[in-house]
Length: 352
Ligand code: NAD
Ligand code: DAU
Image (tube, rainbow, N blue to C red):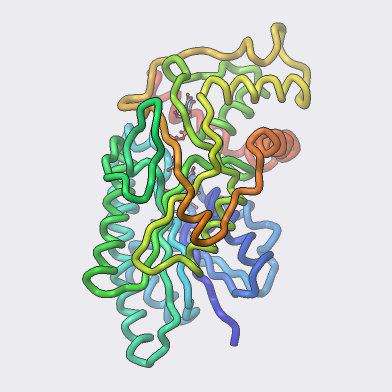
């Protein structure tokens, strides 16, 4: 019998990679529930949109009636919950949508899923799992040493990370109180194709192509731990299908880099691969700007649990993955150009 996976947020950066992965690498039917906010783009799903195993429903995870109907119609045996407001700088400017989607939306989704799952259990159809996709930012910030493990206490610092931490707690509570069969993943910074150009790597690449200044926050010494989005997608499927229920799994590629070093690498790759550089090379575009409020210093993931328990390993080397990502942005301006002004509008509003 054919099985169905439901993805929330499948028109976003990571969700679209997950949908492409599921259609390419599994035999599941896939139904994507996405509100199509500014961050959702159906064009990211062009390569699978005509596949009869794939469908998209436009709607809100917080719309209990729609979610209930979708569950009844498609009867998924697995849900991968990615829908969220995802950008830290936006959460600093206005937290309301983050509270509404990440916390209230996840709560409503959990309730609709609980009703669906209870009916499945009553009919003795016990095959069901719910994966909540979360972030390493729930752990707060590291100093220069140490790694986040699954037992690191939660200490979120931004409105975004606080809303994700709250959603993790809700998902855990629905497991402990009602027995909902859940797993949680906490991943580090993703990069790759189809990432909205508000985020560091695509912002720097697309701005450099316009010979605009490349705004590095503070001194650029903050450290992020980078993972290619396709490595994240494969990890998510493993955790969703094989992870122990009630457990959480950290996901990361052991690729720590200072922000300024990432931006410098992008510049030297553009010198090599891109259109003619401004005088002084792309690096001359780097500008140090006012730091992000409450900027977490360093994130770094200890991925031992997923590696040893589930046998997952990241495939992409960061430098090769970054080169491939830059080549993708160079040849896919049709995708990012329509988003560029909206992405920069956020930052212009901040500057004024
Ligand atoms: P994104 O902003 O690119 O995409 C979010 C998607 O969710 C969009 O398609 C949007 O339309 C949809 N969405 C937003 N609100 C919705 C709602 N109320 N109902 C239905 N759909 C809604 O985000 P992303 O970077 O792909 O992140 C996906 C998930 O992974 C998020 O939960 C995020 O917290 C988590 N995560 C992201 C990263 C990262 O580096 N980007 C790392 C770790 C975890
Ligand atoms: O760690 C996982 C998280 O990674 C995810 O949960 C979030 O959804 C995702 O957005 C990402 O959060 P960050 O805040 O780390 O990503 P961002 O791309 O916004 O910024 C990366 C780093 O670069 C951060 O230290 C801030 C800095 N930065 C960012 C921008 C946009 C700059 O210096 N200049 C910039 O213009």
